[in-house]
Amino acid sequence: MAEPSLTDKLLKFYGLPGQTDDLKKMSVAEVLEQYKLGRVIEKAQLSDSDFSGIDFVAFGDEHHLQKTSPSFRNCILANSNFNAIVSEKLSFIDCDLSEVNFNDAHLEQANFNQCDLKQATFIDSQSAKARWHTCDLQQANFQQALLKQALFNDCKLQQVDFTRASLLQAVLKKHDLQNTIFSETNLTKANLMQSNVSNMSFPGCWLTATMMVETKANGANFSQCKAMGQVNFMQANLTKANFSYCDLYSANFIKAEASEADFSHAKLTSVLFKEANLSNANMQNISAQFIYCQQANCTGTNFGHSDLATATFTDSILIDTNFSNCNLYLAELQAKKIANVYWQGSNKELARAAKDNYAEANGWQMPATDL
Image 1: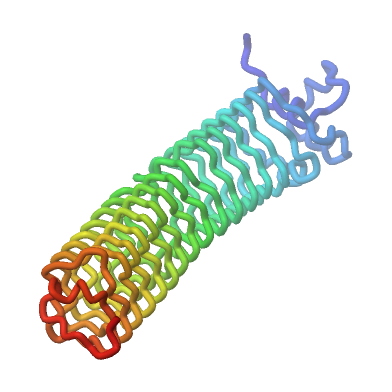
Image 2 (image 1 turned 45 degrees about the vertical axis):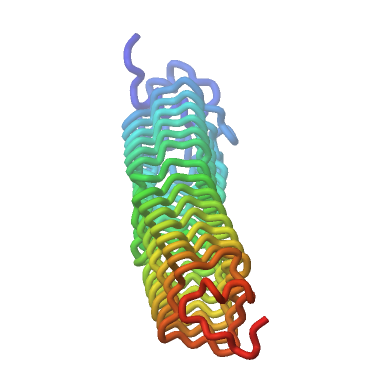
């Protein structure tokens, strides 16, 4: 079967009624003239068509798409150009959109379902509340895109570039993000629950109140993040992760696996480490007033030179733990197990430890205020 002419493709796209032989003989200019006269079908259903390589913008199509919000199903649109189009609720189902140009486009509430979007570009686009379901987005480019409340569900996101993009309140849970690029990305209140970000870096990113419950983040580097307050790492795997110099105000690490993690020089005010595994973690020089480490495993943890005023270690495990040169003013140290703890040079004024801990705590002097 002969390849349809560009005019045929446009006639089908514009949904011109009564596509007679005369209409089909129209030039592209004549087709556009009919379009300008308003001969379009609202919310056109376009299926099983090949629109590959068409520059929709060159044919005035940004206005047509804004008016019609068509639905493409099982169409080939590879290498097409939708640059700067404005279309709310545009829909693509089972389409080939590889290498398509959506730069500067307004795609609010757009729907991409089971589409091939490899190497598609969305640079500077606005896609608030857009949905990507079971799409292949490998090597897609979302640099500086606005993706507020966008949803990515069961997609392939390897080597997707989100540099300087805003993913405020976006959902990317249960994805393998190990080779995804996040640089100066706004992930505030985004949902990355149960995703894999192992060994990744987040330079210049905002992770304020980001949901990272049960994420795999072992070996990840968060040290260059701009903001991480209230981030939720509950039950996450953070083995050997790097949080040095981070501000983690009110973050949640309940039941997290954080053995050998590096928190040195971090701000940990009001952070929850309840039932977390902090064994052999580096917690030196932290500022951690009101830190909560109830039932935490602090075996071999190094808190040297840290401000732990009013910290709580109730029912924790403190074996080979280093508190040397720490401020432990008003700290609660009624540990479940305590042995070979180092307190040299620490301020334990008004700190409290259980009486049966004293014999095992190296250098502990029982203050009059102790229980």
